[in-house]
Length: 143
Image (cartoon, one colour):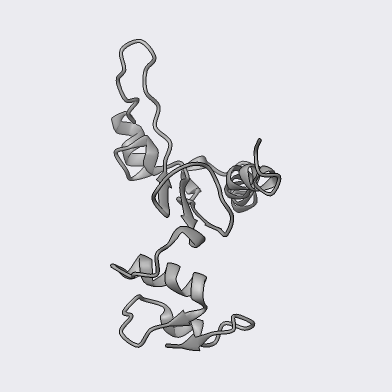
């Protein structure tokens, strides 16, 4: 039986980036003006099954019959300034905060450590950590 708390979240993961796209572009503007959306979702409850605590999803279109990956043509590559279709669709990250083991191996882990423990250790080097010190209401503690 699914966790009742996950039902609205599942829809939100998909809807919030799309709402951003709708609000960003004005009627009549070309789609090439849309900026890449990266959706980062901090999850503090059990979502799905998996051993990792950082998951990345992107959109790829694969042929059902020939199993080829749909690609942009040369005009579209110039228009969107990229070679891959997945580069123009949102990327999704799910960070399962409670599943993190508190060992920061890289700068992403340092941020996850902060979101879990509301504390930044003195040896952390992640960009933007200075902004956390002025983030209102975060209960920030220096380690």
